[in-house]
Amino acid sequence: MKSTTHKYENKNNGSMTKKFLQITLLLLFGFSVQAQDKKAKELLDDVTSKIKSYENIVIDFKYSLNNSKENINQESKGNVTMKNNMYVLNLMGVTKIYDGKKTYTINPEDEEVSITKVNEKDDSAITPSKMLTFFNNGYKYTWDILQNVKGRKIQYIKLIPISSRDQRKEILLGIDIQTKNIYNLIEIGKNGTKTTLTVNSFKTNQPLSKNQFIFAESKYPNYYINKLD
Image 1: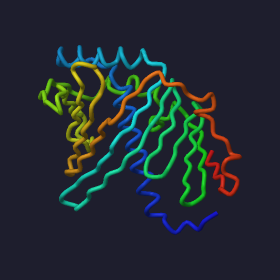
Image 2: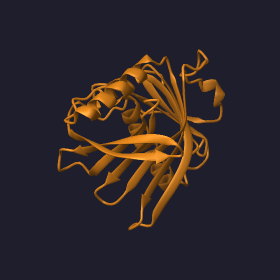
Image 3: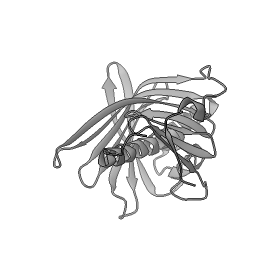
Image 4: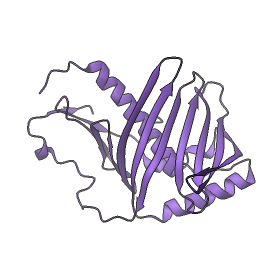
């Protein structure tokens, strides 16, 4: 096992990975809502219907985090494959596999695999099934601007957290009017941080390996296996 000389970097990468995963799951599974805006609800219902009809979803994306005051400007590309309550996420050199029961975080830089059992009753647990009802409470919804992006009509819906303790000022969800697929999601924090997820490729019902969501320890013979249960 390599020495853990990059603890700060790893912590930062882990935070970005977790934050991206939260945003991705919100983006894909967060549309069972009771929107105040009728038009917003109808559009979100259309997106929900399409998402639920897919057997699996494979996304290539660009993820950026910007804060001009703090001079932060980070960008990364990655991909995520999702099916039912399972996923495989690749971001910033780290792979996360969730098989429906446990999360396996594979870090090649440190030659380490962290294994965590997920308790779906835990409010902080991130699973696709929990995100199906995430937006049921806590947000106000409004119909926002329509933009033309390279010939595509992107309709934005603004989500404003109700709780004053929420560190997010607003979330803008961009939806392709023609396909009813997600184009991007922009999260703006009260501290000026702007996080953007842009979908470069959105594929559905792809042929996946039967072992797609299974962690094979034999593939990592020199890695330290850190069981955090």
